[in-house]
Image 1 (spheres, rainbow, N blue to C red):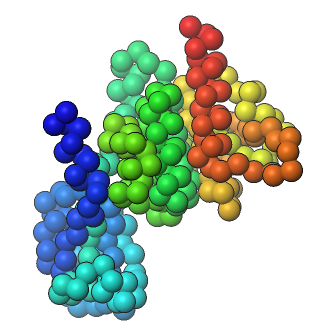
Image 2 (spheres, one colour; image 1 turned 90 degrees about the horizontal axis):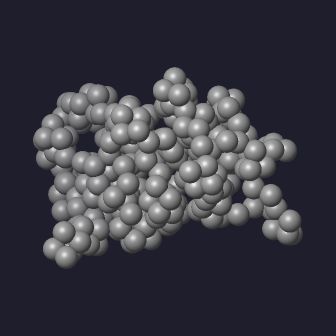
Image 3 (cartoon, rainbow, N blue to C red; image 1 turned 180 degrees about the vertical axis):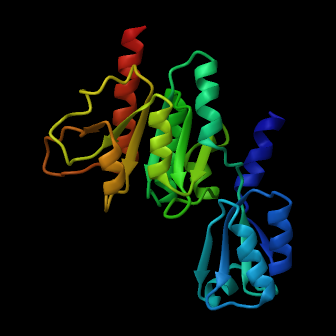
Amino acid sequence: MDNFRRPQRVKENNEFVFGIRAVIEAVKAGRDIETIYQQRGLGGELFLELKALLKDTLIPLNSVPIEKLNRMSQKNHQGVIAVISPITYQNIEDIVPAVFEKGEVPLILVLDSVTDVRNMGAIARTAACVGVHAIVVPLKNAAQINADAIKTSAGALFSIPICRHANLHKTCLFLQDSGLQIVACTEKTSDLIYTPDYTMPTAIVMGSEDEGISNDLLRVADHLAKIPMAGKIESLNVSVSAGVILYEAVRQRTTAI
């Protein structure tokens, strides 16, 4: 029970690091940082040092009005606030070989610009239930892993690897080179989600509700697959869509056993 309570305390509080020097030291120390907010127009040698340090990391740096920083904290933030992540991001390059070594068939979920934290949490909960080996998100235009996301996931975000990568196109190419097929869930096709063979090593790509999957990911995909729609509403919530296609993969894999 103690192991369960500790994450609960973490997820209820956003932990911040204030001030440029403090954030620099947090980055150097390898703290798990969700994102860094900088005051718009901020300059100076110390800030340039921080920017140079971030070039070798996968930590987003967001320029925002000072009013946003002041709302986050009344402390002397010096124009920079880092949000500490409750999870440790992992690398998909490490996970895929490990899955193969265990004799399992990889099932990876790639989220392209899914920015709503509750959708992220709901998707993670479903992914954990069906045995997805990892969720891949972009460095930018991705939902923050915060208290709302973790609560919606029912704690699943603590148990499933989340991988953050700067270029999803290159990530998908890596997955293909590793033997995975890319299945993009999109309405821009006549093929239904039942067409692909999910018993193969597979990465399923889901896009945002407003813009869908980006064209560069659609072009690299091995299969385009859509969810059949019969009613007057033409689209599903992305978390529901993810559940539908993931359970088709589970159905095929269970039947094949």
